[in-house]
Length: 225
Image 1 (cartoon, rainbow, N blue to C red):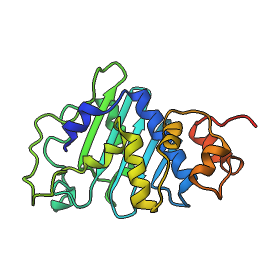
Image 2 (cartoon, one colour):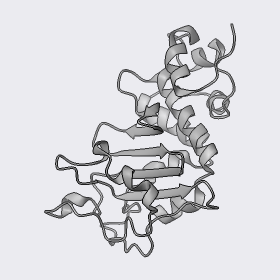
Image 3 (cartoon, rainbow, N blue to C red):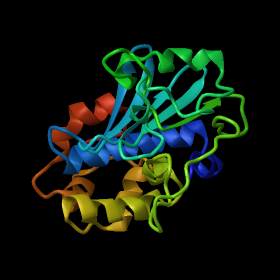
Image 4 (tube, helix red, strand yellow):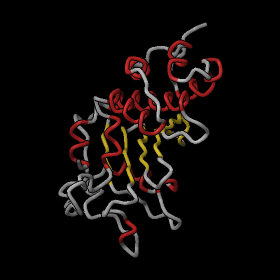
C-alpha cells in the first residue's frame, strides 16, 4: 500500500468529508477526552478531519474552498523527514501540488519546532479534478522485511475507503476491545440522524442529549426528540 494505491481508491471530496465526520461522531460516542478521530469546522477558514493515535502517527484532511488536501505522517516510516539532519521531505512528495494548497504546507500544526513541514504521504484534489493526486515518480524505499507493506504510512488512510464499516468494526475491537454491530456503524457512516438507540448500542452510558453540542459542531444530523 502506497499513496498511489490510496489515491486510486479514495472517494469524492464530498463523500470523504461525510466519512470523516462519521468517524468523529463515532469517537464522540466511544472515545474520551483525546479522540482518535476528530473533525472541526473551524480550521482557520477551512474544515479539517484529524487522526492521531497518540504514538506519533497522524493524518489530516483539510477541506478548502479549492478542494481537499491530505497529509499523513508515520513516525516509523523510512520516508520520515527525521531521517535527514535538515528534515527534508522525501523526494517527489510534493511534486506537482497546486499553489493553492501551499498554505497547508506552511501550516504550523503540520510542522516541527522550526516550522518545517512533516509528512510521509501527501495527496490533494481540486474540486474540478476527476481523481486524487500525489507527487509524481516517488521512489519508495525497499521493504525492511516481509511485513513491511506500507512504506509511506498511507495505510493509516485505509479507514476512509469504501470498506469503512468493516474497518471501523475491526478498529473498535482492537482499540477499544469491544464488539460493535456493523449495522450501527453503517447507520452513522450513512449520515442517518443520530438517535439514543444508535448511541446506546455503541455505548450504553451515553445519550444523544449529552452529545448534542459536540455532534452539532461536527455538522452531523441528530434526530428530533
